[in-house]
Amino acid sequence: MTMTRRAFGIGTGALAAAFAFKPSFAQDVTIVVNGSGGALATMITKIFEEPFTRDTGIKVRATAPVSLPKLKAMVESGNVEWDLTELNGDDVVTATKAGWLAKIDYSIIDPDNKLPAIAKQPTAMVRASYSTVIAFRTDKFGKGKTPQSWADFWDVKAFPGPRSLENSPKGNLEFALLADGVSPDKLYPLDIDRAFKKLDQLKPHIPVWWTNGAQHVQLLIDGEVSMTSCWNGRITPLRNEGKPVDITFKGGALMLSFLAIPKGAKHPTEAMRFMKARMDPAASAEFVKLVPYPGFVPGMMELLDPAFAATLPTSPENAAVQFEFNSAWWAENLDAVTTRWNEWLLI
Amino acid sequence: MKLRWTKTTLLLAPATVLAALLFVYPVFGVLKLSVHDGTAFTTDALRQVYNSQLSIIVLQRTFVTAATVTGICLVMGYPMAYFMAGLSPRKRVLATYLILLPFWISILVRTYTWIILLGREGILNKALAALGLTAEPVQLLYTPMAVHIGMVQILLPIVILTCLTSILDVERDLVKAARSLGASPRQAFWKVVFPLSVSGAATGGIICFILCLGFYVTPTLLGGRTSTLIANLIDLQVHKTLKWDLAAVMASTLLAATFSCLLAYWALTRKRSEFATGGLAR
Image (cartoon, rainbow over all chains, first blue to last red; front, side):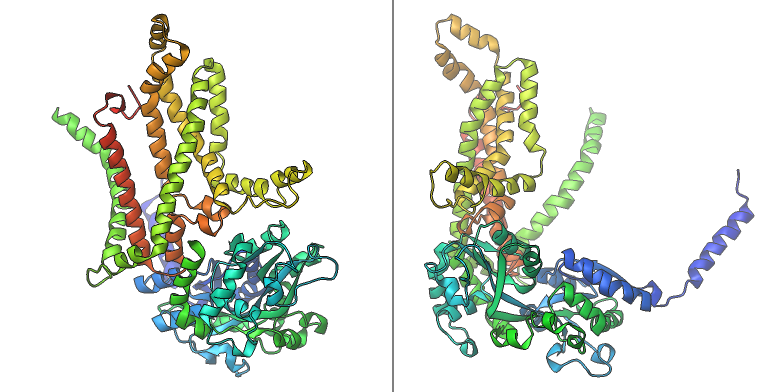
């Protein structure tokens, strides 16, 4: 079969027309949203991204993991792949200072001004709140005996067995000071020397310093350690499976996680529309039932079963026994403390 | 002759371009990053690294670990290779497959296996407890010992195979000649087989040593805080502290140290004819 020149002409003409008339609406836009990946990303896709694409025509591509160096490389090279990224508190402070984040227009995200002020920072919006708490094995210390404070965590006689902490000074310095008797409202500015001195005591009892959220859970389940610091959302599913593990919010660090737009992002407006979708109360309520990191979504708590709401890190009873992690202090001191931390830990 | 040169150049060109693009250029970038802060030359990063006790200790630790692991691999690998050389060709092929089998499994999987074996509630600790040898679980995992075990398991096949090649290269007739001239089997081994195959063992050793210097996964998964090697420290500077200049200095130092080791090896062996081919082909 040979194609006549005429037929070819018509064909290419039609093709050209198809391209020329393809509407340049939002339907063509795909925003890249960077998060922490894993099971969490699957739930975010189902609960937030798919309905958002249905409603707006804007497609969402999820990437992982959250990485400040990557953000730095993108912004500095001018090749910004992400339109939106998750960041933790001190990353936001660092990135804002370095000028890697774009200013957020809250008239798009929160037109009715319902979001509490704490959630609305100039370059980042609070996405979730979570706690770093004590997680422990319920079968290692005798019946009914469970750690109630960081002082108990440090007490290797009453609560024998190896422990784990995160390989990072963040949070650990606070925990050490709490264990040493500093009251939660007097933590900041941290007494760094005192904290390291207290950490010295526990150092021989920590065979492994965890580096990610999957690891601390595994260490506990495998019996490598009988206590560890832990993100509050990780233990509930295991306890529901009947594993002998539990957490206490006492002495926990209440932390915030943010969404931010890199400077030079290709689709900032669409990214902000997606941020608005992330603040939908019904979807957020569904999400928080699976992942207990609530944040400050207006109208969400009212949609939850009160018994369940009481297990969230921001419930009044739980919030009362925790301290607010001070990201600003850490952004200011992270460099110096990290250098000292590494020398203390790795030599 | 001229045509041959053109042909050679053409055939080598793709590999050269690839190496230049993917290796030489980035390495140059790393070298530059360690002495240049984007606007001017500076020795700031160099001074920070060499004045820090941490980087010196970790660098030392990396070389000591590499030497120890290489030593263990040679002591275990050479006899194994010697044993395999004495097998019938059929059995030797089978043995080679058995040695290559773990080599084909991902390093990650093999490393995780040790977590199951060495853990506090792992197979080894359970066995020790069942035999009544220990009252409390022994801390095996997250120790330097666990890192050594993991690294030896991963690198041993390389050493065995390089040793095997060079032992097989030794003329059997030479051994027969030695025996017929009155040498005991032990003498024949030490005076004939060993000197002729030691270059292969040395090649295996130097490959093993250099691979050790860059180990990252094994110390991360099996090691405790004092098992951190230089690759882990570089990763820390890139991903956690964002000090890429320090990471670049460390990487450059590692590169320079590796080259020095190769140079020393070459200087020590260049006068000796048995090392002339690096034990690879005779």
